[in-house]
Amino acid sequence: MRRTPRRLTALAMLLAASVLGPAAPAIAQTPTRVMVRIVSHDAKIIGSGVGGARVTIRDAVTGAVLAEGVQEGGTGDTGLIMADRPRGGGVFATDGAAGFLAELSLTQPTWVEIVGEGPLGTPDAMRRASTTALLVPGRDVLGDGIVLELLGFTVELREPVPGSAIPAGRPVEVTARVTMLCGCPTSPGGVWDSDGYDIVARVLRDGRLVSETPLAFTGETSVHSATIPALDAGEVTIEVLSMDEERGNFGIARERFTVSR
Image (cartoon, rainbow, N blue to C red; front, side, top):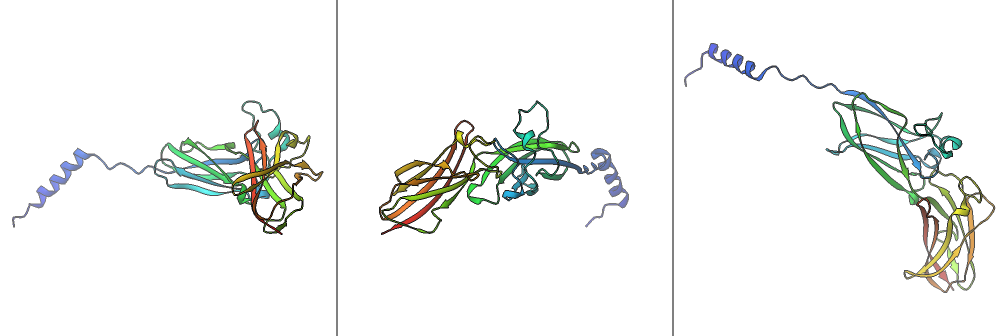
């Protein structure tokens, strides 16, 4: 086999380098901080008291997870959050207020999807919200940050006790605790005015509605109750619905019971 002279090989390499130019330098990763806050619609921040909220930031193109964690801290300043808000005025960035501070390493402007899920402490009331945003290396998003709202109520059935049997032929006491997703209390005339909500107990049998009864405030913060008509023996589902049509907030607790003779 004929060998190529070393001088010709070196010359070829030199010519190739002159055509291709120098190798492109690696693009440096730039630290970029992003504050994310998950809040309850028409209420406050979802804080540690209700288990906080899970935050995930993904590259919207590749799906790669860039940051994830749990929002922890307090629910924020009621006066600031619930007051009429001036344009550009911060309301969530107060001492101790919950939030998730992501620290990303970006090499270029990047489209991301930001997802919030919570409240983690009440799985039956879990909600999810997401948004898409463009982040730029070195341009931090702090203060109130990127805010995601979760709609709804947390409804917890207290009576009948889930898993218990209900005696046939007797009226049934239905009691439920109704709060905002952040755990904020509901009561007549309160900041979260339950007079503006429809809270009802519904009984269903084989998927058909048997009865619907409004719940009344008991005098205990966030607790509402009603006596529903006696039930025949068999399997039933009892639902408590809390509804605020004006603000689009809805919540439900649903349990199956055996009505025994």
